[in-house]
Image 1 (cartoon, rainbow, N blue to C red):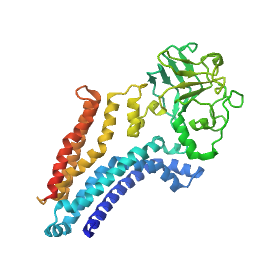
Image 2: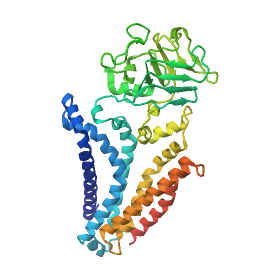
Image 3: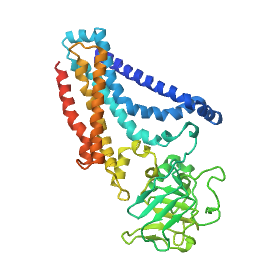
Image 4: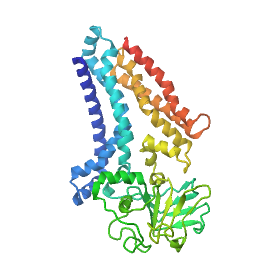
Length: 430
């Protein structure tokens, strides 16, 4: 890397940082006007105010970077090229026989790095803060509740409903599991005090992170280990959570919900476990033949994750590609055309963002001597056309049968990709 490359790269990265920090500062200042009282209240009962601000706004800044990183990078291209042209440094470099493509190469490589960071942030970081991004300032240290979206498990014939869902604890309050398939002795509904999600793989990872501090106990039915329907959750100030199952032994190697405080069917301990004739494995486990369950506990095997029960769309927007693909492949739930289109759009987003940046290169060359604000206006028009194309393609794939979701998501890249490459090759010789 030459000295001029380092100079252009530092100027470009500094412009990107200034633009993002300015935008983030505006967001924090305006939002803090309405949430500062709650944040100060949080600091009085726990961490210091700077730490509370970092815990609350940190995930939002990650989301803001994912939403605006590409646009900020594109605008930084124009600002950096405009500054080099205004100071005469670009003209001097061109007079030495260096092409525009060689001058812009550090910024192109840096743009690719920023998009790669965006990709890593979107797929591995943001999904970890999905629950934090749904919290209000006054609920920063708590597990918020939201309504449950009824979801039908097609593989077991069970409609999963409930009163409230706590996504952080992965617990359904007052679950109502309607049985549309024939399960002998269970009737048409399962009613309980709460349903706790169980995932053996996620639990194993959590145990590994926690180390040997996780207690282990037997799950045999006893007054000490069995919750009764009359005992409300959170009576001792502690709400149930999926991590409470870490100390239980004998749990099955399948995902599902542990229902505690079962009210229907009555006399649960006399009803044997049941399954479907179309499946060899059990679906509903009962204490009649499962000694690891208490008298008022039963286990329902299902692949319907609590994230699928959220009424808010954060479960889809903030999910990783692997989660979306897993939901599409899950035979227990119906995958809409819109969800399939969204999954393909997430796959092509990174190359599509880079193609958008390459489209702006001819504007950066600016042989016609147009002013910077004219170039910015042209770039804004290009961005509007870009998102209009994406919106139309998404609508075609999600709400019509004209094209498949995969083709609809790839249409923008098939149109913009070759055009962006030709423009990039043109700049190399100008």
